[in-house]
Length: 379
Image 1: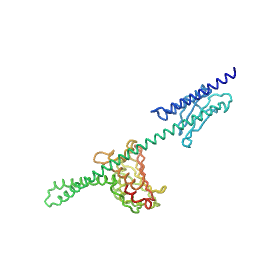
Image 2: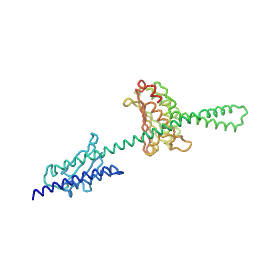
Image 3: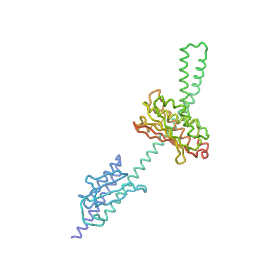
Image 4: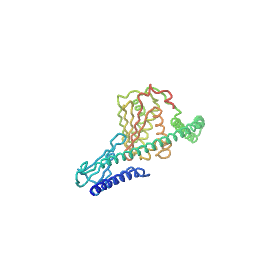
């Protein structure tokens, strides 16, 4: 009779363990559930699977975030298993008895429960790995979509720029010629001046379109980034002063020369600085830093202005997207910056917090000079 009771108890424990693992696998395949919801569901499955469910509490820790049963508290009677994701320990599964129980195979726990908690930890690790793989797949798909959109817009922009360039040049040329007429009334002269100004503005937009479409290849020469910064700021210091912006320069004397197009790098800096000034309508502090890091020269432009929301951050390099008022921006400045940096085999990152400011970090490879083939500058 005692043997039958023992066998029945063992069978009951196995059924509980298998039920836990089955329920865990069902949770893992729930569509639409967040990882947090799945982990909270997992932790609720733990107490019923152990020998004394009425005094059992569970906890799952992943990346310093905890998911616990309502009765969880620290206890010396604990069983634990690490959650290892892609070879890296990311957390642990803990099961505790909140009251003392007789000694078994592992403290008050059964040997089979050691296997169970290890299996639970492994299953959670698989859930996290699948989630990460899905997120990476989504991110890559979005990158491909964005690249396809940018390529299409680039082709369109190049075509539009080419078609507009000649008629715009004619308008500008004839307007400037008309201004030279000796008997031109003052009012007509002023009207023609507006035509000239609008034509020049249109020509600048066409130049930006050509740069964005990468139809204007960089001119390769040895460039000192600090010189580019200092020359660019000659054009912008008065604007900073006029807008109440304090300019702080932290230029490293250890900057090596790189192979780049100085005029395009100047355009990058001017665009970033003008954006920063416009982001500080009531004045503020603009900090420009140069340094060397990991075979790259680094340019940082940081302000303490209005900052950007997460939605805005996702779109700042999309052509024609702008948060500025009409006539204050074309939405091409940052896409042009991105195109220039990309054509130089560099990277640009942006961090921003609403109400606190924005930080742009540009990295340009030091080795680009001798190791890049000609096609790298034109593809």
